[in-house]
Length: 266
Image 1: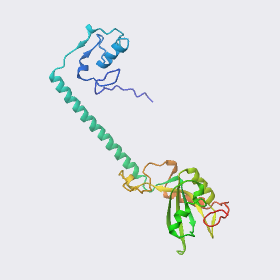
Image 2: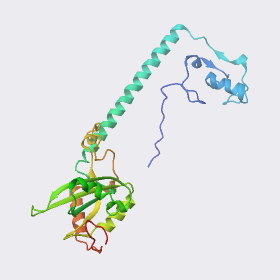
Image 3: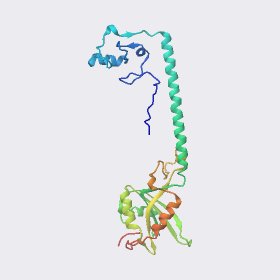
């Protein structure tokens, strides 16, 4: 591939040393006969704090050879008008870039509708039939003999479900741990364990993207449990992907021992 060499023109004159734009007085300031132009700030810095030599030709700066022209009122007015014009132009360009960026992000986020992202600190447990009242269940599940034994818990959410026969209540429990390692230990211990006549299933939970975030809008729900930032691609799955993956995992034999009520050992 040929090198992408190009010429370009700078929009504003800048000092080659401090890279600051020349003000109007700097534009009319020529400190060296060789024509190498620097701003007055850098000129004074070289004269007072450095070697006093022109950075280009290495000639000592001499007050007698400095060229400097007084600025007229017309030049000041023209300069101020150009500064204002350039600021407006830069603001318009920046605004166009930001609009284009938002439009691009909106378009790309459309592809994330329906995508589920695995949360490595979130455990989803099914097959649990509670033996305590509903108002005590959340507190019970946090106790050390239950989910609390695996690590610090950020949040527990419970969804009520019915079994296929429509008779017995089954719970879907989402446990969010502070650490993903604690979630992994929980899954290893709970998955395949016995809860009465039911076998518990435990796996990493997934979540979807917040609908407001997908529209590039501010989410106003402080309790929103969905994602508000882009998840890792390797942890993102379509509904079909998850269906196939969970179907395969559910057919794998488990070797966990049969635990007592919930999954309390002994």
